[in-house]
Amino acid sequence: MKWAILGAGNIANEFARSFQSEKSELYAVASRSFEKAKVFAEKYKIPVSYGSYEEMLADESITAVYIATPHSHHYEQMKQCLEAGKHVFCEKVITTRKNQLDEVLNLANSKGLYVAEAMTIFHVPLYPKLKKWLSENHVGKLKMIHAPFGAQKPTDSPMYFYKMELAGGALFDIGTYALTFVLEFMSSNPTEILTMGNIHESGVDESSVILMRNKEQELATVELSFGANLPHIGVIAFEKGYLEIENYPRASKAVFTFLDGKQVMVEVEDQTPAFTHEINHFTDMVLTNGENPTIGRTQNVLKIMDVVRKKWNLVYPFEEMNK
Image 1 (cartoon, rainbow, N blue to C red):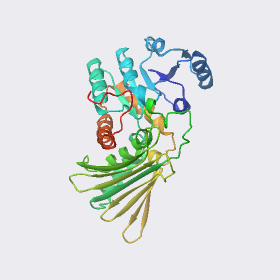
Image 2: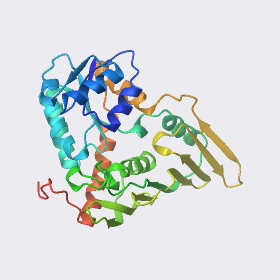
Image 3: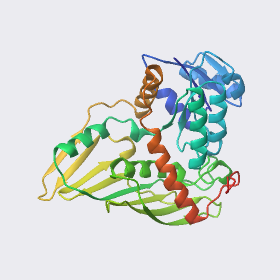
Image 4: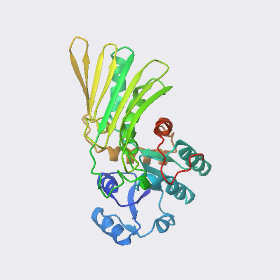
């Protein structure tokens, strides 16, 4: 199975560095600049480079495309890839609205192709082990989840962070991690969502708080910021203690503290890069024609984002509100 990368920016470099697969090959990279694609290909020993996305999509030997462009481009580029007969592994946030993803998935299903989001939390090995430990140790009912994520970004950055036309803002860039983390542990999706957001003068969301509750009366708080750093430590409180997960988007260990102060560490020795797990899981799914276990969770995150943005009245210039 041959992979291609669409876009040659920062995150594409991380994907290429992490590419380790016995069942697939990193075969091509495409950029709007042939020179940029060529330099990227030489850096990572990728056989083929293209100076346009259309040329790459016309290559019938390519099975799957990893989309590494800004958020604003994902929706149209995923449709182009699917029309060309390629499976799609798209960087987060996968689309800016849930109805866009629904449309993409309908197209993929009609063509017998896979679409998934490159979300680390779905693939790092700690989380399955952690859920098994929680089940076996009878920690009681889930009460609260706290998921902060702050990463200060310069407002004059040439990247998409503060650019409305590229669907910048903290919700799409780092909120995907926090909301995915919350939904990994909540017993059901939230039925109530409250939020306050600070909108930067550029138009994007800079900082926000999101409060959620589901039918089981489980509460979750998410705090996001581009204006300040916040620790990436997820906290999950149960009746019999609480769990702390440091660097929860790419975690390899967690600590549970019981009511009497006793602590237990749950960890995995596997230090394989998160991207490597993502690549191999997607490859296996395609090659075995397996179930797509993560796309429903991606849809649920987008559903929350739609509600939050509506409450903020945040609309990007390329969006049609009533579509």
